[in-house]
Length: 336
Image (tube, rainbow, N blue to C red; front, side, top):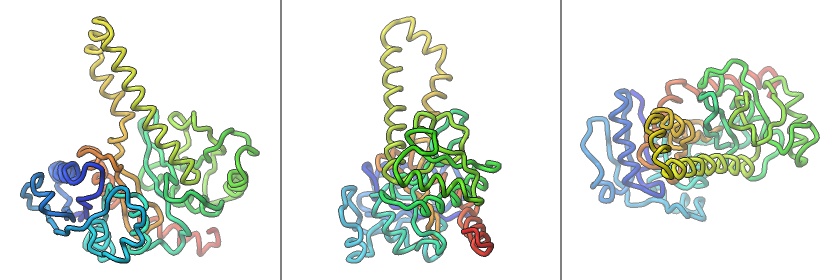
């Protein structure tokens, strides 16, 4: 049985959508056991009895606009996110899923679950949609605004293992997000990283990649600093939403368009699904000693369910142990 800890109070629409997403996951998967941490009084209207659902009450939780998560951690260990994180640390849970404030989750990960010894930084690594439907890893999507080239190489090595073991990619390719494909493009960080990735024997380097190629690129991993990758991710989400709105507007204009939409109902649903951020579920906080999934702050029940699904799949793939073993072997060989 896979045990998952859920922060019941994290997210813009908590606790309702978090509880509903949790119940949906329990309905869909028979091999998961979930403990949800949060204010039981506020969660009660949405909870229902289930043999594989456990509730740990705490009246304390983080606001989405929390400015000082380090202070919160030092002054109150009973906050729902921190209790759920502690369950992973102590082995009571195999993974945690939270839609709470990103920086608070990163801070809690550092203090409670701890960073892998061979990882100098952690990264937020969502799997983003792609034209072929296989998905791609995008990182760092917001954990670090400032990085050094060696940090990005660490991320590339970790993501390569993840792409191979979880996404089943043979010899995954790492692309560096840049303003042009030529080697000399970009900031000093980009130029230095390009050289480091080119010289590295630990990864398969694709080269520079312009953001306009993100959705159709053959590369398996898209790499940049937290500021750049976060903009790319949110631009993808915004563009998908805008395309859907334009399409809906045009369909409503004429009877013939409405009739055509009816005939193409399945195709349109698949189109929406292929671009929908809620299908992704969440992002792994890569580099920690446990599986920590950051669900989108605006997650609805379906999106949060997918975050739990993602955590389940990563536990099944034993991704943390495989990555740790691989990185240790490469360190022993003098490659890291």
